[in-house]
Length: 228
Image 1 (tube, rainbow, N blue to C red):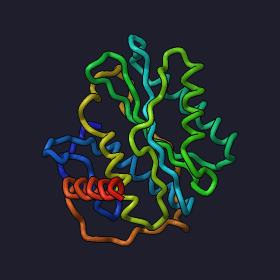
Image 2: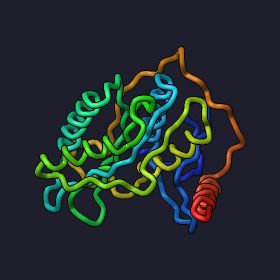
Image 3: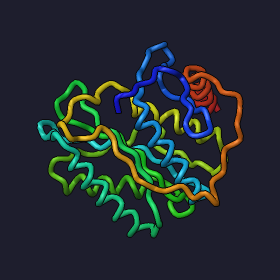
C-alpha cells in the first residue's frame, strides 16, 4: 500500500478515472494506489453481475479508548452485516470496501462503502438500521454515521455516475491517517467479487477533466438542485 499518487486521474484497467487529490480550495491529497485498484475492481465487478447497484457510504466509529491494533472489530462487523443483509433482502452478493483511519484521536474509525443489487434494495435505510443494530450490541463500537448524500444508484454502462461515485470514494484512500496501526493490520479491506465477463460493459469513454474541475461541476449541480 506504499505507492501514493498526487495526480488528478489514474489509469485503472482500460479507463482513466478522476480521483480526489485536489479540493476546491487547492488543498492537495495523496491517495494510495493499491486500495484505489481494489475499489475500482469491486465497483466494476458488482456492475458486471447487476444492471443497477446501490452504493452506500457509512462511517463506523470505535468508542474512545477502545482502539485496537488489528481490524477484528471491522471483520466481525462485516460478517454480521453481510449476514443481516442477505437474510433481509435475499441478495446473492454484497460488495464492500473499507479503510481504517486514526487521525487526531487514538481510536480508529472506518469509512465503509457497501454495494448491493439495487433491484432488491431500493434505499439505504434498512442497511443503516442493520449497522446501528450491530453497533448497539458491540461494546467497542459507537453509533454509526451517515455522511451527507450517503448513497448513489449506479446503472451499468453509466460512466458519469460511476465516475462520480469513484471520485467521491477515492477520498477514502487518502494518505493521511493511515499509518497508526499494528504491524500486521491492514489499512483497508474489500470484498472479492469476481468479474462476470459475459455481462461486463466498458462504459462509453468521454473527455477527461481534472479532479478539481470535476469537484467544481459536482458542487455546481448540487447548488442548482438547492435553488430548484
